View 1 (cartoon, rainbow, N blue to C red):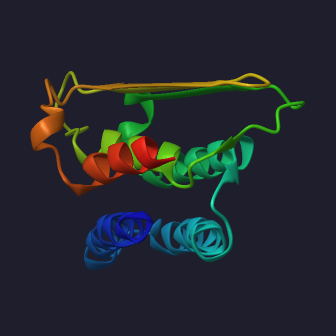
View 2: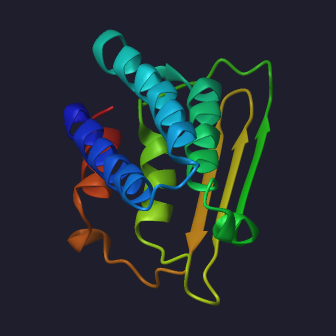
Length: 158
């Protein structure tokens, strides 16, 4: 189940970078660099770890958000807040936060006039709270795509 997240994320990211490349946007190299950093984290976690430090995954989720915010039209529509207790060594299921953040962008048309994405992550010593909100409307968890379905199954198993 864990391996299903990487292709899901990778294909969405590559499609985004492709559209920038076709339009010859100056942000394309920065997108490739940020994707490279994220893939480095994902590869290390996928092959070597059953869990990951929550604070590391939060930092990569922020990198992912910043990758999307290279589209300057979206910057005022996205709020990413994180509060990290530096003493926390909480371990979580790999890619869990990244899946939620990536789905916020995938299922939101930020070019719509009233569109928004709000992401809040609070990491305490022994707990984490992740809240995501966007303008995609109601999503039936029983009919969601692979990303959320796989995440739910992984969390039930762990």
